[in-house]
Image 1 (tube, protein in one colour):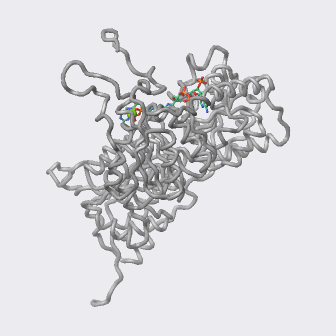
Image 2 (cartoon, protein in one colour; image 1 turned 30 degrees about the vertical axis):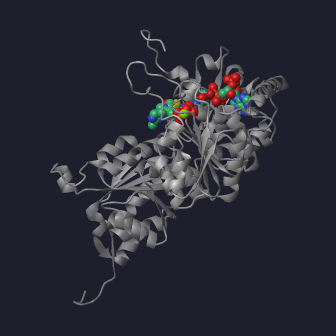
Image 3 (cartoon, protein in one colour; image 1 turned 180 degrees about the vertical axis):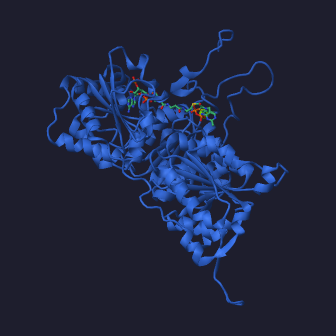
Length: 568
Ligand code: OXT
Ligand code: MG
């Protein structure tokens, strides 16, 4: 090149932004700081939505659920060591729950980190991330940024989705290269999550087993909801005539009020079924590992549909494994059904319906309970009606009693509208998931939160107000974890599970310019939530719940180890 000739240049900052845009990633969930502050600024200037949180864990939960809702990797951007570690819980959570997510973190200088010479925020982040995600990569040269992002995107969404870590050392951002060469180095990922067609033999085997059943059951997991094969799944369930049980986040794939829904007859269908087809649901603790008391005495055959071959036989024998993506598998099922199918015996479907009606009828009067302070059912009866009136609204839900009772009481009508604690039962997903849900879908969000659960991400109500999001947070305030009534007799400290009595979380919302309401009765609660849904204004309702109303660990108290020496 002749001296003095100007060459157009690009750098690491711009290549990262261009790589994201080229791949249709238009939102970043972050907390700014060294070395990524300018990256956030430049990304915002380049038209990417950069949402700044108050804590990386919440940004990470937002990115994870954005991935679940969109099937594109949600991107969380953090600073080195402490920011990275704050985001790491969410990355591990995304991997466990099969949400596609990329944690992009700035990091310190390799030369100093590797010699452990004490750099600013020194940490070997790649090594730490590796066991907690699907894949982990580091980019050292600007010309590799395109490939780095391509690998991260493909790893996150292909096969079983999950979390990916991408390590970008500070020095990378300032590296300069020829702009044309930079453009050429970028990769637009083609067919990032290719269809995985099931083998015809496995499809036939599965349907033969299902057909042979006297008391068949279909269990839908959140993998089925993730697949966005909603019509195919609905057709399959309806054409097969088999009762279905939705796992928590699969509620709404078909409405909970659907005549085949067995959600309100859970114990009965687990115990009494003879053939169970799992679609995007794993036989983990949430299904008692497919064995033991809750599955009854009668012999049981399992059919499993999953994209991950290693999932088969994880806990019990799977007599008919079908490996493939759920859309492709269910559409193959539907084709086969079209050439002839016999509905399951009416004796079974009637028994399931009868049990369901019985349980629904048993619950109905509790939902009308108008007393003050409210109990869980009285308050949830109100929210059940709200979701019926606003079926497009997204329900975010965490807590113990607040989670378990809301899951049972609030019927869902549309797919991917219920977002909760997922496989780990983790507290803290609330505000991050609510924010991403509002941003990614444009629909109003109702976040139903235990007072303890809310505390894990409560500061993000400032973020909600700052971005003026249509989120209504309802805190079930029973003064503590499970209950607010525990007493410590050993010293002056409060009992380990109780909080400040009569706390007014609504005042926190007012501090940031949002609407705060204290609701002491179902009527007050109803008025406040309706107003929030209509106005779309950031709202927090402190719903006062009887401190004695809850039970230890909600519906999973049996998982608490017991001391034989000290009975509670
Ligand atoms: O068939 P049967 O008769 O069995 O009846 C079932 C259904 O048929 C019936 N049903 C219905 N009846 C009528 N009508 C309708 N519509 C209907 N629908 C269903 O109801 C029953 C029950 O149905 P369900 O729920 O489907 O069945 P079941 O048996 O419960 O299902 C089993 C499970 C395992 C699938 C289910 O229970 C489940 O999904 N559970 C998830 C539980 C979970 O994840 N819990 C969260 C963790 S608890 C604990 O760990 C907490 N911590 C510790 C902690 C955590 N988690 N994370 C971190 C980071 N740090 C610490 C903490 C701190 S919870 C917690 C805070 C708690 O305090 P809060 O203040 O937040 O909350 P409160 O408790 O409110 O105070
Ligand atoms: Mg509580």
